[in-house]
Length: 213
Image (cartoon, rainbow, N blue to C red; front, side, top):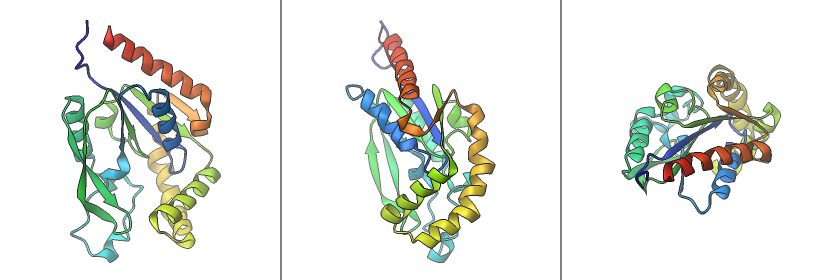
């Protein structure tokens, strides 16, 4: 019989900003509510900018790979895979820097790593058992991002639109869209694609069953 300390399953869920990654992640969590599922959001791993003046922080390009502290993310993922707890950072989007607070997170049976560029870093890809790309039309993505940034991040309509045109769209085309080639499964329209969610859930269940035999 396989040890109860079997390596956790890692699922990478990527796609453009507003593509529906969160709805896909939520759908997976709902399917395995009786299982142990942990979600790690790449957004929490933006680099600390407390050493910069606020005016400089406002210039941050959050859609570029350099914005992420992937060294820390890789380190934390490896610790979770070794069944060690981590202190996950918390990012303050109103102050544009990392919060002084952290969140204690314990490893679980299934780990979902979600973010626009989780497939961009080879080190992260190598840790994944299943790689998913959520593919959604650009018009839906900008509307979802607009609503999120205004309601959750205190942004103005003008600032969100300007950022989308000057940063988000070109960065998506340059960095996020090309990572689609690494995906094992491409899901159009996010969590509304129940067939794709069923396929992924079946694959996860197969891995879990094999590990528990």
